[in-house]
Structures are given as C-alpha cells and as structure tokens.
Length: 455
Ligand SMILES: Cc1ncc(COP(=O)(O)O)c(C=O)c1O
Image 1 (spheres, rainbow, N blue to C red):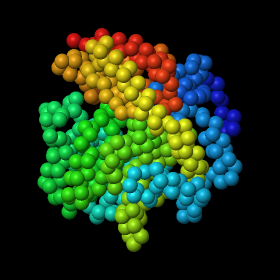
Image 2: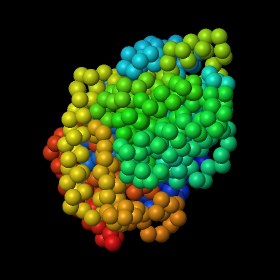
Image 3: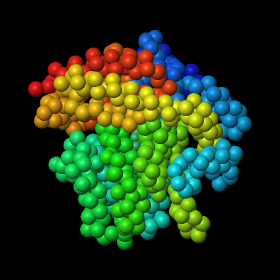
Image 4: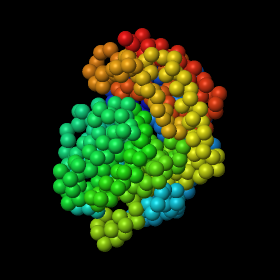
C-alpha cells in the first residue's frame, strides 16, 4: 500500500484520481477531470489555472450568503474545537438551539424538526413521517420535479430524467401535472383555465381512495432544477383547500427555495399557506457544512409523543452542522438578504426579460426573487423545445450544453448543464447590480449558441 499520508498529489495525479477513482454525479464518467476549484470568495471562485469565475448558480442554489463568509468559518472553527459531533441520543447545545430557531423562522406552527445531512434525506424523513402519521401509503407527486438522489426521493422526482434509471419501490406514487402555464398539460391558459391543475389533483385523490389511502402531496413551491416554474398566485391556497377537504398532508420541499432565495424566508410565505411538513437544506448552512431539516406542524410533532418515531441516523443533529446553521441563519436577517433577494430579483428578471426580447431562442422568462429561469425554444411561436428532454441521457447533440460550455469559457457558472431547457440564474443573495449586469452580459453572448439552432 502507498504511504497514506503522502499520496502523490501533483496536478496530473489529482486528475487521474478524478477520472479513475471518483464517481461524477449524473453523468457518463468523464475522460477528463473537471476544472479544480481552489478557492472562493463572495460571488466568485478561482480554479487551479488561476482564473476567477462568477458563480451565478450559488453552487446548485446553496451558497446564498456567498462563499467563505468569515463569520461562518469562525463559528465552525469554534464549534470544532469544542465538540464536533456526538451520538444523537444525547442533546447538544447547537441542536437544541437550531430546532428552536427553525420553529421561529418557519410559518405557522411548524415547530418540531428532524435534523439530517441534506435535502434528499430531509425528504426521506418527510415521507416516512407522512406514512407513519397517516397510516397511508400513497403519496402524490408532480411531474417535472426533483426531490433528491436517494431511492424514495428519486422515484418521487417524477419526470426528471435523473429518475429514469431508478427502479420504483416503497411508496405508492400518484403523479400529477405541475402548474406549468407556459406548457400547460391541459392545453389551457391562465387565468381562464380555472386552475385545472388543482381540480385534477382533487379528482385524482377521489379516484385513488381519498383520505383513506392518500397520505400527502409533495411539491417544490417554485420548481427549481426542472425549470423555475412559478405557480399562479391562487394555486397553493386552492391546493391547501383540497388537501384539507381530504385530510391529506402538504409537504413543501423548500430545499432550493428556502432561506430567502425567492425573496421571502420561505417560498410558501408568498401565498400565506402553511404546509404540514416543510423540508430544507442548502441555504440553511449554505454548503459550509452539509445539513438538512424536516420540520412538522405541532399536531404531527405531538402525534409522536405516543407513537414511535421510526427514523434516525448516526449523524442526525450533527453538532458542527447545527452550529454552522446557527451562524448562517441570522446573517439573512442581519444583512437584509431576504429583502435584497426580492429587490435585486426584480433587477435580474428585467435583465433576463431584455435577453428574451433580443434572442430568438428565449421563449419564456420567469422567476421569483433571485431565482430566474430562461426557457429555450427552437421557435417562439410554436414553443418547440430547443433540446429534447432526454438529450443528456442519450448521447448526441444537445444545443443547451453548448450554451453551458460557452458560459464556462467566459468564466460563469449557471445551472445550464441539466437536461431541462431552462437555464437558471441564481447568484448568491449578496450579488450587486454591477455583478448582475456582468452576468447578463455573459448570458447575452452565450445565448448566441442557442440562437444558431432556432428555426
Ligand atoms: C427541491 C430539491 N429537493 C431536494 C434536493 C436534494 O438535496 P440534496 O442534494 O442536498 O440531497 C434538491 C437538490 O438539488 C432540490 O433542488
């Protein structure tokens, strides 16, 4: 065996380990190592070649407060010196404080949390809680959604191409359409559609056995990776009414949308709707350490006082992760980042709208807060998608990847490489107007690659 503390670590060694020893997520295993990031600060990061780049994706919408905030780094070091982690059967100060903090910032009487290590785990816990609380097996999910890479979360990610390789199991699933007005599955237009998408859920629940068999519905309040789908304002209040009618649980996956991303603390705050279970991760620790949480309303939390809570993990409530969240979350309030997301989100949306005017490949622009999507088409009139949904999974030409490549060459990272025809712009919430201008100017150039495919 090689000397473990002295593994060869020159550039070519690291490249080789990436190619031979690492599993790269959601892709054919690459023949070349991706560029190596050596440092990051604020909205920028630097790669090994010394090049500084603009992060307009906040690392998959997680680094909301920006990279390497010294306040958080210091809090992590302080906690690490005291206690990194301990068995979850014991209490730690960071876990106790974090569960109280989450009860304070989440809507309504959401008040008891299970602290895990990421978004998928938070959703796994939510689904298990819904089954255990209701005693029912069926969960409704929506097409074009992503809830995480673990088995249940992945199969609930209906219509996301990442779920196609998954063998379904566990939860009985019912799949329903999104409130995706640009491509309404009912062929209707808002507002004359009379919210067919909610009426459909109502009918499906009835046909599936109503409140006797259906435990809940899981959704992203603003759909993220599958295309920044912002619902009409009546959608969630109506969905709440339908769920209450049947006595089924609303599970809001705020993993991407939580913590100021859409211009409110949580996206559900836009519609004053309190879900029964809310999951979160990403912006809770902004990637400084991995953490997720599943927060339930008081009635559900109380249910488990005399019913066994059948879920857990060795690193549940990890002290160092919780201390990180305790340092990150107050920064949203102290630095007015939630308000900032609302204000600068409008500025970003205006910039993206101008790109739509200019580029024949931009069919639709939509967003909420600093969470803006540009949907690419071959033709604005027909709305023919620029790239077939399976383009990344089936190797071959994918015009959208050309846009992603151009963005990379010009030194900007956006959520552009996924197979969906939407490029998401989601810079850290500390972004300035000048940086937004810079990002829009880069997008302007990169979109030329998509324009070349329009007909
Ligand atoms: C809405 C949503 N839910 C869940 C997840 C999974 O989170 P994680 O990657 O932390 O497991 C993601 C990740 O992108 C997400 O966007």
